[in-house]
Image (tube, rainbow, N blue to C red; front, side):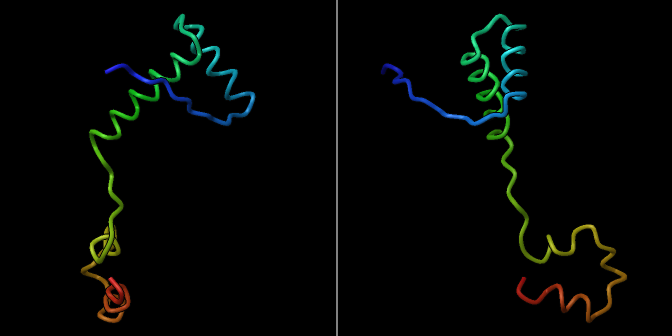
Length: 81
C-alpha cells in the first residue's frame, strides 16, 4: 500500500528554526527529512515506554515520610483519593 504524504505544521521562533536548519545542514539532510527522522525516533522511544500519570493515594503519598504523618494528615490526603 503506498504512503500518502500528509503535512504537519509547526510554529517556531526564528532562533529555533535557525538551529534546526543548521543541524540539518550538518547532517547533509533537507530540513523536512531531518525533522521527520528526529521526531519519529523520539516518538518511537516515547511509545516504547509510556509514562502514565500517577493517580490515587500512592501518588499523593509518594516522596513523603509516611511513617511520620499524623492520622489527621493521612486522612486529609486520602479524602477523594
